Length: 113
Ligand SMILES: [Zn+2]
Image (cartoon, helix red, strand yellow):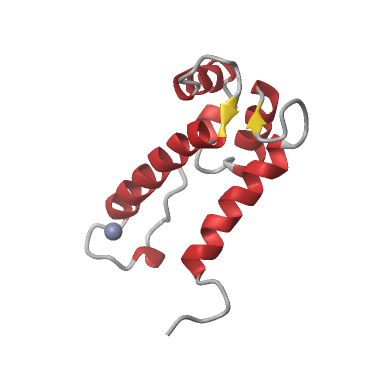
């Protein structure tokens, strides 16, 4: 039976969309991330997962260029979600590396670097 309150997974999806919008609304097109908005998002909302990357301007630029598949210097929601997919895969890998014995993900070091 479906419940009225969103599940934890649904809330996590909503949070990803909310955070994207919080940054995408700051300047230019309300639904895309400029280079500056992308950097702000990496520094404030991916600070642990991208700890090394956030300190290195050149690396952030490389990530942005990789994601910007239509080369318009903006990241659409779809383009930005390619990074989320990579982070989710990397995070799952790291969880198992940090806690190789099982699927009790909560007792490992987590997946931040
Ligand atoms: Zn797993």
